[in-house]
Amino acid sequence: MDQTNVYLILGKLLFLINIIISYPLIVFAIFQILESLLFQKMKYSMCRTGLKNLSRTVVVLTGLLIAFFFYYNLHKILGLAGVVLGSFIVLITPSLIHRKLNADTAFKKGIDIAIIIYAVIMAVWLSTLIIYRWDKV
Image (cartoon, rainbow, N blue to C red; front, side, top):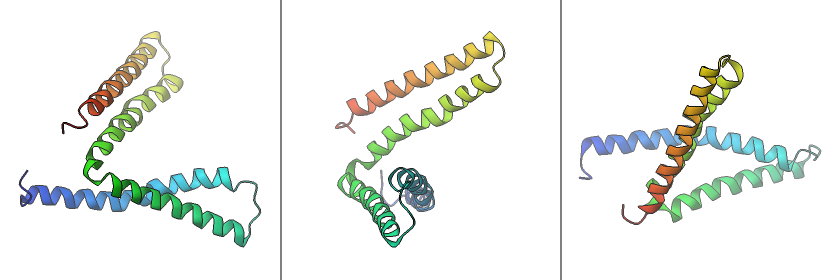
């Protein structure tokens, strides 16, 4: 694509804003999980605070290193993560919740199961396609 295209530049700018806004939200969840596992039994102290800050630094640096080393393939990694995580978040999770809370007939349960099966098949198929075409794109 033409790198001087206004729409391409606008799309990149909006994507950058999206990353800047969403990255702290994503790593916050990672910090909560990681710190609850690592520091659950530690008493509050300067050592615990220092270790928490170190773990946060390691998580952020890991993200930066992944982005640096996979700079030219980052769109492929984001596409693969989007297929796998997106299908889970958009299709599988609501179907599981609906099946547990509201599916009172066999038909509703069958529809939920069909959506889950469809989402898994599409996630596997599209992930395989992305990996198969990794070097061709």
